Image 1 (cartoon, rainbow, N blue to C red):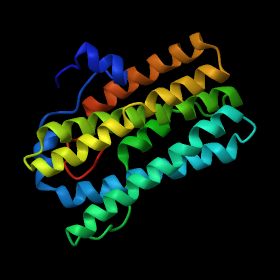
Image 2: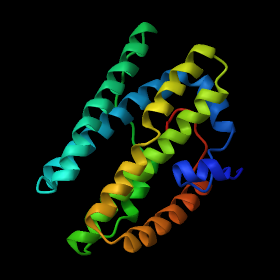
Image 3: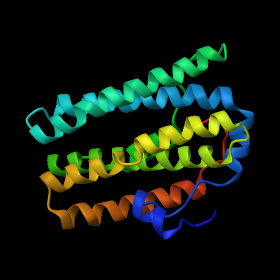
Image 4: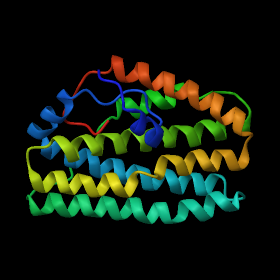
Amino acid sequence: METLSQDTKNILGLKLVTDPRWVDLASISLKDILSDHAWCEQKAATSCITLISKYSNKEKLVTELAPIVTEEWGHFRKVLTEMHKRNLTLGPQRKDVYVNELIGFQKKGGSPEERFLDHLLTMALIEARSCERFKRLSEGLRDEYMRSFYRRFMESEAGHYTLFINLADTYLPKEKVRKRWKEWIDYETGLMQSMEVRGDRIH
């Protein structure tokens, strides 16, 4: 798997890009990609709502995540609209192996502070990888319209991962955030190397 350019590392904090074969497979499974993408946007919105509900005493978190809920739900609607144009239906939600593996890496039984940090960093990593995949689709799909479609998503979501990092920095010591973020990045790199390359999933 090719490594990321320094610029992309700086933007997304990732060590590896998606296997190039994924875009070719996604081109063949565009119906499944759109359906899975819609569900990803829905889950992003509801995850932010969960954070707001759980940490309602953290004013900055509530204030900054509220518009993200609106944005992610708007993205969900945009993908649904695109599916309807193609006479496609949403279909059932699929098991997200990538996200489940990340959740499995979260510290269990630690302090509330550690669990809060891991919750934010999980969200940051999902957003970073999603944006990287949108970038891949915007550059590699054969359909010019769909390349543009995913370019807009990439641009819209490019800053989301840093929002969660910045929120972690607001409530926790930066050195602790950076140390744990490095552990997350190293874990995600191994996960990406071990996962099957599938073209019917965003992750």
